[in-house]
Amino acid sequence: KMAGALMAARPFSFSFNTSDYRILLMDQDQGRLYLGSREYLVALDMHNVNKEPLIIHWPASAKRKGECQMTGKGRQGECANFVRLIEPWNRTHLYTCGTGAYQPICTFINRGWRAEDYLFRLVPGYADSGKGKCSYDPKQESIAVLINGNLYAGVHIDFMSTDATLFRTMGGRTAIRTEQYDSRWLNEPVFVQIQQIPDSAERNDDKLYFFFREKSLDSSGGASPSVLARVGRVCLNDEGGQKSLVNRWTTFLKARLICSVIGEDGVETRFDELRDVFIQPTQDERNPMVYALFTTAGSVFKGSAVCVYSMADIRNVFNGPFAHKHGHNYQWTEYTGKIPYPRPGTCPGGTFTPGIRSSKNFSDEAVNFIRAHPLMIHPVYPIHRRPLVVRTGVDYRFTAMVVDQVDAVDGRYEVLFLGTDRGTVQKVIVLPKDPTSMEELTLEEVEVFRVFKCIFLVSPQQQLYVSSDAGLTQVSLHRCGVYGRACSDCCLARDPYCAWDGESCSAFTPSTKRRSRRQDVKHGDPLRQCRGFNAKETVQFGVEGSSTFLECQPRSPQATIKWLFQREGKRKVVRITVTFLRNMRISISLLPVQQI
Ligand SMILES: *[C@@H]1O[C@H](CO)[C@@H](O)[C@H](O)[C@H]1NC(C)=O
Ligand SMILES: *[C@@H]1O[C@H](CO)[C@@H](O)[C@H](O)[C@H]1NC(C)=O
Image (cartoon, rainbow, N blue to C red):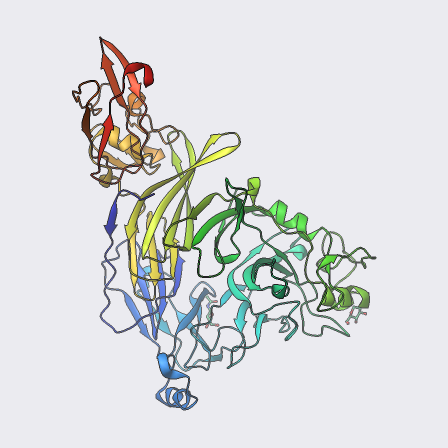
């Protein structure tokens, strides 16, 4: 399936030499976009991206670069300061960290009170250690979030990148980490996403959820996959244990995320390689939707899928039975013994444990139990037990994702922007077809850059920002002009961002709702929407028994075209449903009426 409008977007060009545009942060208050790359931090004006950006040059010192080279680490240019974290600190300052040529460093940025202050600079003379906040090796993925002055990071904490951990530093609370070199907790993890999600109105129950993939402990077994996708969580107010698990999480739990599809041949395709997670807020802050992007593990068969999980399902798994393993040669089984009180994973001082002030007051049994049983036995299944989007049998993989909610004439739609490893972004919408199945439509595909990884951000100005190793690009969410000027083309496109306004296909905003706006995302039926307008009708004459060319140039990949067969005054629909390539010519043999 090929999308219609393949158009190249132009990357921003900066006056300085950098690469690895990996960090993007939106500052809604100031209408700015912050970008972190190799040795540079940039503040762009989201209202006017052509305005000269504010730039901070933040290199590693020459001395440090020299020391880094001496260790033999700099062969691919890693002996530089790669910015890996930009987080809001307070009303006037941001906190930022970089790899510092294999010696992570952090500092504050003064961004001023208001955008008009036109301020963006490092706090002079200030530097923090970045250990446990950002990885040493720029090639290692890391995740981090600042919550109430505490920094929670999924990082490699050592120079050699052998010690991966979920680490808490800074602020008033004690530094806490996962149990070191315990493969039951984390086994060569790759961290993907981290976010606080409250579990109840009681703040002491607040938890941090993180998403990662890791090596399976059972990979020698053959049948089980070598990589597993995980959701994990800890309590924000965890202070570690008193006798055991001192300065270690006492509330760390994890569960497997399943994303698979059963083919028509009955063969299951599993997507285990978690690549990206997008958490879509809903009215209820406790129940955002979790969109997860997966690919198949291994290099032979290329497949990608997006699965959606509900927080209710994730919580049910964490409230369910624990996994138990007798020794290295045993399979995981359900733990059926007595579960200590408070139930492992419960936060101190929460709804069910009001009398326990700190995790240091957890019983020894509870602490020892979680140390050996951080894994839940049941996996989390996606909503409807199947992926929302699947791509198999194609020569590309998805690498990144963002989801936008769009209000259209006939309801609210979720549009997925999916980055591919061939350097394009696909804009995909999923529509309910009937109560049990969904229909997935690729609205368009935009060429961004030839890269393998990218990061997305959707701004309130309805721009999609794509950053990657190679650059930063901006793509408008609604590029309605690509669907042409005709009502029927606009309607067939089924793009919830676009509607036909009487003259052309243009951006649709619900606030300026006008009756004359024609849009039909659900059915894409131009016969109903565009009657009397410039609906496209082409008459083609054919002779029975012979063949003829029916030529058409659909503007959108959704143009499933109906040809009407007219004979003796009666019209009959010739059912031809094709996903058209742009400017494709098709040849159809006209069959006698009875056979149509
Ligand atoms: C924000 O934090 C910085 C760094 O700690 C500090 O210097 C500054 O005064 C703070 N600003 C406000 C408004 O609290
Ligand atoms: C909880 O732990 C603290 C510090 O370890 C200790 O001082 C206190 O007595 C404990 N409280 C209870 C109720 O056990």
